[in-house]
Image 1 (cartoon, rainbow, N blue to C red):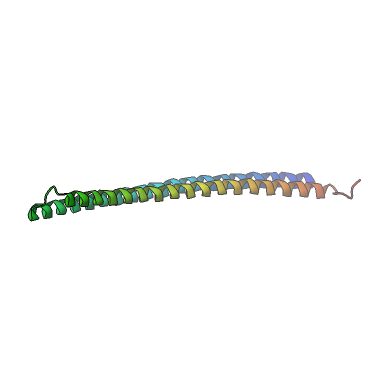
Image 2 (cartoon, rainbow, N blue to C red; image 1 turned 30 degrees about the vertical axis):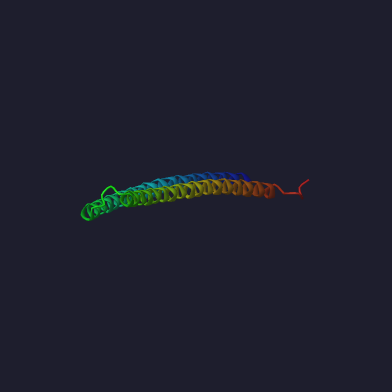
Length: 140
């Protein structure tokens, strides 16, 4: 009976390990899908920001031409401010993307650690069951 129990426990352990590995693989797939979605969103936001920058610069140039101050230090300073604002927004978006990548990688490492813990618990359980089935400390 003890041998049958050990065999069943070993089979259960194998099934548990396979399930936990599948869970870790699915987390990787989810992370990749989330990253692709976020990348698309970031690219769309960058294009929108670039479009806004171009519109603002065109409006500035038209206004400068209309008022006769084209090429002035004020116009150049405003163009510089618009470009700096655009660069800041792009940098902020890149930082968000990097943070998202770090979180996703951490989740995957956590899942893998959970798998190791599950395997350790299963092996511990098999060991205690085998120890108890053979009489434990009372057998001498």
